[in-house]
Length: 84
View (cartoon, rainbow, N blue to C red):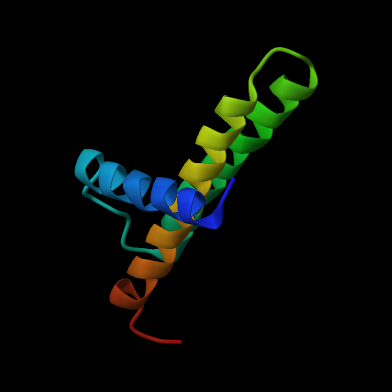
């Protein structure tokens, strides 16, 4: 997959997620928990694929969700963090 396609999918997912879930946690622990939840879903999709119970498409979807939430984390950490 070309990087342009990957980035377009991630940015599209960010837009979708921000509309669907506009309230992003304000503290870094809960923000990181959202990223971790998505990474866990990616791991589950990968395990399912390995066991022939899932698809490559599902892994791509979960990887895109993980990347989008990681970007939301980075985007919002500056806005919510008052100290370093």
